Image (cartoon, rainbow over all chains, first blue to last red; front, side, top):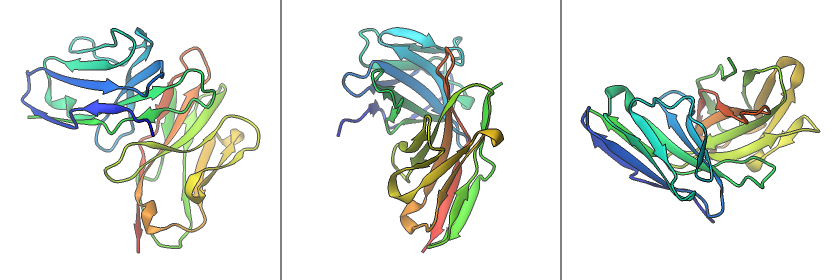
Length: 115
Length: 114
């Protein structure tokens, strides 16, 4: 069964350092999402891509976060500099825009700890 | 602002007990509704969804949910839980406006005791 791949699974960094997360969606899925899940809360959308274009980044803290999907396939989410409050699980999800059910398929996430 | 509320943050049940998890949303327009589950150490996966039609929808593993439009609710139920249902459950609402945004609730952590 096709899956959304994310790496790294775990990342520990010190504040003010740069971190990057990678996501490879299910093949053929044009829509890609990055969510952040803080402990005890539900996932919060950071950015949504349709192919290589950003559709929604209204909740992305653009002073320190950036996301790209240059060729419309895999995507990278970067944080620079990391802050203590960035400690969370970063989830990537993808969706086939032709699928009327609208189901999102999630990766296993990248857990970030900022010291 | 649109929001999704799950009032039960932690639920503990014994095997064979019945389960009902509440989910309410605040949005006056058309929505699609989802329940996702996250088993320990695994990724989020879809349990069931409602788009239109019969407000009682059935999902995987014996779960069902009922959409009550007048109450803006989409509660999840299971008549008899198993130890393997121990997981975190998330209600999610997709706004059927130009944003097509999917908004999650804060989740309910279910522990089923054998």
